[in-house]
Length: 121
Image (cartoon, rainbow, N blue to C red; front, side):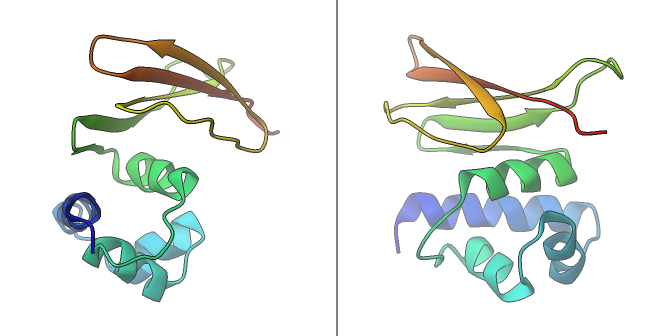
């Protein structure tokens, strides 16, 4: 098990427990099974979905920091504005998401990726 996965999992669990949510409640809200969320929290998931980690951050209104990377989801303040999610990565890789526009910029810390997702009616 990679140490960064375990660290991310601990942060997810701590954020969930701080809101007094069960794994079942969070899993249902983000579209995962409780067992898969448990793997995320233990750091033993074979495959992590960045989209699901974003959803977790949004639902828990949390930020996660792992190995120099920060992941946070910030809801829009305007009802008509798109939802903006920002995270910074210390490595460059292309990420593809459905219905999302990505803007990638280099920073001193790594790479800043800004995704803009259109709201659905």
